[in-house]
Amino acid sequence: MEAKKHNILWICTDSQRWDTLGCYGNPWVRTPNLDRLASRGILFENAFCQNPLCTPSRGNFLTGRYPVTNKLRQNGQDISPDEVLVTRVLHDNGYVCGLSGKLHICACDHRLKLFGKNDWWKHDAERMFRGTEPRVNDGYDEFYWDHAPGPNMRSSAYLRWLQERGQTLDYPKRDDSEHVLHGMPEAFTQTAFCVEKAMGFIEAYKGSHYPWLFSVNIFDPHFSLRPCDRLLERYLEKLDELPDVDFLEGELDNKPPCQKRWSRPPHPWGMHFDKISQHERKLIKAAYWAMVDHIDAEVGRLLDTLDKTGQAENTLVIFTTDHGEMLGDHGLYVKGPALYEGAVHVPLIVSMPGVIPEGIRTPALVELGDLAPTVLDYAGLPREPGMQARSLWPLLTGEAPADSFRDDVYCEYYNSNMDDPPQFLTMVRDHHAKIIVSHGKECGELYDLDADPKEFKNLWDDPAAADLKSRMLKKTCDAMARTIDPLPERIGIY
Image 1 (tube, one colour):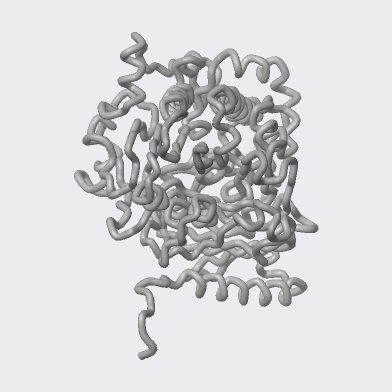
Image 2 (cartoon, one colour; image 1 turned 135 degrees about the vertical axis):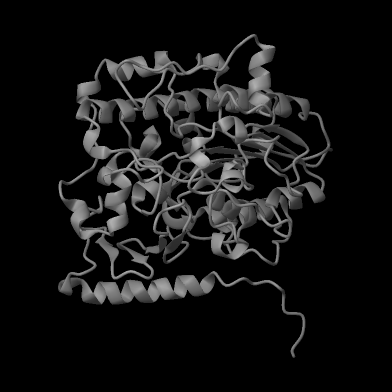
């Protein structure tokens, strides 16, 4: 009798908030497939990324090492070839590994190096890519790379996939919005491309003796927003009923000044919140949610492929994202020097029939970096000595309590996104409070999450919160100490 294979299907979206799925309590979206996945496994109510930008977060969950440790602290950096990705470990131990879509652990846009930080933006994105992003020993045997769906990415497997189907990538502008575009037809989106490549891989290896991992890296619902028109339509029919952003007039007055600068460009990634009408704020949210609905439909095709090929019973399925999205909350869009829940709180669902209990919701605090040692535990492989994260496997299999895991979670932002002046932040969040330290500045943020879950009231300078502040500062020091690199390994007494 053939031994049971330990396959892994790892689905990662980009910039997806935790509160965008029906199973997380969103009554507006249509996400029956991800809700079904949650009913088959464990839903983590309190999962957090370790940096609110793509490259640092992805480097973290692929190595199990904090961004400050693996030195991948910013977008636009290359991961060190000395870093060991979990996919490489699997490959070196007999796995066949594949990827579709985004990787983003090395610099993709070379304009900064070519033209300098003051002039890079003057040059067309045609100069952005030169082949795929540089690859280290990442372990991927099949590599269908697409960094972001754009017409200038000549090395994009997605663009070539479109060409084979007689399609041209095009996102026409809308008459009613500066920030929302018309998307591609559903069958020709980057999301559909990523899933189709995964489906082909799953079907190809259904009779193989080799275990496999496939990493599905969907670019949606990342800005710019380009939803499929059909999926957006149902939101447009009730646009006035949609909830507005979580923003309290004047709330940025006692928060770090960089947030106010971010909400009012010339911050390089900002959107001028004061100039976005309520109608367009709701349209942006509707477009974002419509993109999530499309993700769900495509995930349904993936899950059906696992069932059809008889591999659902021996495949660990992970669904998550790299970080969140502000989506107008606190007057902020996209990502930058802020560590609000919208930016760092992410969805995480893990399922495997017969191994992981079904229909479990856990409030345990977990970090995305915990996924790397978890995958190795599942595969029966020893953890890499440089890993700092903790394996979720005992929690997933019921060997450890599902309601507790960490006392707190840690997040960092070390000049991650070309802010001027540079910003250096660290965050610690437990079940009741959050502190964000703005290093080198006489400011910070402190929130009582029990009394103020939407993080409106900053208690940093409140004398009544002095004890809470002191306790959370101590936790921050402890968390930063834990980021010390465990390498090189100690091999002797002296």
